[in-house]
Length: 220
Image 1 (tube, one colour):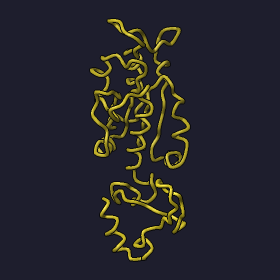
Image 2 (spheres, one colour):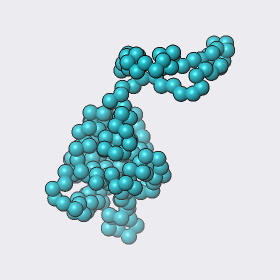
Image 3 (spheres, helix red, strand yellow):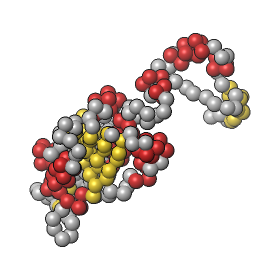
Image 4 (cartoon, one colour):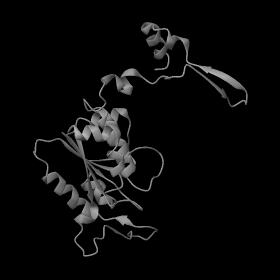
């Protein structure tokens, strides 16, 4: 079973996402497991402080390196076998851009540990000495790494046999092309303000699968 570990100060923030639809069914079938870890559980002070002010001044708070280090070490120790391929990832704007090629690469690991920053970021010693790599999901700023973790987990989980049900559902196999469903004809006011009959392309109604495949290939 593939395992995804999420280290965060908000361990319940993604519960609803991973407990719906295909992701829930896949976990129930034992295809993969998602575990969230509360970073505050790995602190040693009585207030469970996981962040502090930045050296050199500046606004905001920075996630401390020590609890992150302890969390990653404990998660690795609990791995069932030392033979498991484990990768620790820190989400960062400076990281490598995540795409489908990266999803395939990361899908080869048995266990992925995701470090989710918050506030003004994570102590740089985590990037240098704890994480195996830094990953970015795009050229935009989010408040934390939890949404990137969900995005990466879903992209990778789709590559696990049995998660989607039909292998033909994989986007990279069938390509991206326009899709339609019933009814065959819809009458709407379009952007110009005129009422138009919007029909399903006739080739999709033809029953000729060769022509349909040729039509779809034009959009791939």
